[in-house]
Length: 377
Figure: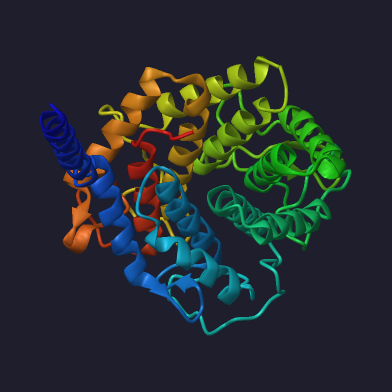
């Protein structure tokens, strides 16, 4: 009887061992495999010495870093975690205005991920908040807080409030203020109790101003910025391009802000803006585009669409809208089947034809591939 019992136990343990081994060797879902291939291709542009990427600029590197972190948070390989530490150390000196030439020798500026452009600073602040969420290393959160303090210095009473785009103080625009709002909301959620009120106050102040600034037009689309009449001082929507990233950053900011309040209007406002983006910035197949496509979009715009996808994904983590989930899948499938060139690189136009890639188009596409993955709490 004892021997029979031991045989049964041994058999059960054997079966369990086989099951565990099979589970451990179970292949990753195809969507995750695709995203990891895209990340591996992106890292071929990475320069260890600088912590940045050839073929694109300084603020773009912050977005590439965020895309890598989001992939790891979605269940991807943690192999790139070492890249975060290297970038944090090596990219401490800003490249003030990035060029696609990849001329990273021009390492001038201010230490601590600061430069003359408040929007550039905002991207790095969000990247280090994301890195903090992944690693729980306090230095990343501390850097984001230091960056935010510098950004807050860009606020004044011109146009009733808001921060300037640059320290030259010649333009108030959507992206700088959306990023300021987003960084404030993210820090309010994560800060210690003794400093949380500071970020909460800034978030409330920024959102209150942004909603009356005029930059959100009648179609619920976000134009690029504000024109200031020099004679009268009157500020109005300048009617300039509705870029996908302007339509996107505010979505993630409102989603994060909703975690701090019981105001149901925040997610409702975010959904209105998201739906306007899907209605006006996609083609008949549901693939996202910026208006500069397929011609040259310069050094900045190739980054924009991925930012929209990333922030819509953050919103969808709270609202769980099937249309948004389908949108992610549509774009990821189109990128993989119509925009992929050699070595798993991706170009500017997600609906194809595949165009030459660089680190900006690659990290933008990576954002979209990550957006199609389930959110892990």
